[in-house]
Length: 414
Image 1 (cartoon, rainbow, N blue to C red):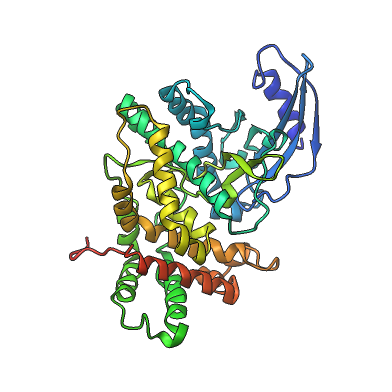
Image 2 (cartoon, rainbow, N blue to C red):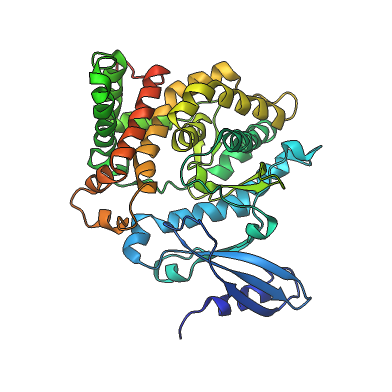
């Protein structure tokens, strides 16, 4: 018998996913959400009407139907993480936070109804059901890649509030915090190690950026620069570099989003078109590590070189202020000096993410990700993405890493 999402919705409503003693009256499917990034899943949007007359706008995520792509993106792990986040971790974090005095320091999450992750022969039938937050007025920013300063600042305040939940939970129940995040799975690694070091990924993409940096203005400024030599050492030793960047160092470690960027942030806008609220989505790749991991990925992916040159200190100050305000009195959070030290250790992780994701965002429509899967060296696919613009943007990030002295390499790496 052919599987249908309509039949599944009937079943889960009857099982109580939308409240006890309710049955499904109708489920109407609509067109997909505009600007939704679907390269790791597919989406169905619609409205559930239950027997008590209530209407529920929903967004349903399904695994990619192509098994090769599903295995490539490790969809089973992605769905596992999203489910454990919404079923266990987020409720625990909110319980530790308790009621907030005002909405200023509150952080909302998508309403979760149901999820299934049986995997194997059932993988094509696995799905997760959320409230469709478009009906609440949340939208993706219209810009494809970079955000303006107002959007950047409010998004940094949101991730600060999310990190604040970890610090509060660690303060109130550290044992349970460690236990509940222990089941998070790493979709970025397999038996061959982290994807960023397979095929010398980080080294080759780093060379793309640093070669362009040296070619600028005849290369006089950076050709003999110690920072360039240090960068080359860091990316050449990719496995140890990522291990150090992702190391859990207490007491400052938090549960990071893991892929915090424009595609995982939705905004509510006022009548003047200004953002006033943020919703963080897509908790597929949470990471327990330095809060600077999320900051480095977000700032290098979604700000321009002029923004970083002019506003970097403001961005980090805004994060620190929001973080301090998001936790109860007496809860330990990093100050700006400590955050700067964290950035020096982990900012290279932001470059690693940007070196793949930024050119991918700039790709032509003909450059589909399955092309990388059939390549003898998938890095070749990403080295060509984004063209000259992508290369320039990556060189800008390397220049910032060098100028900020955000590169470290131990005397005796292990």
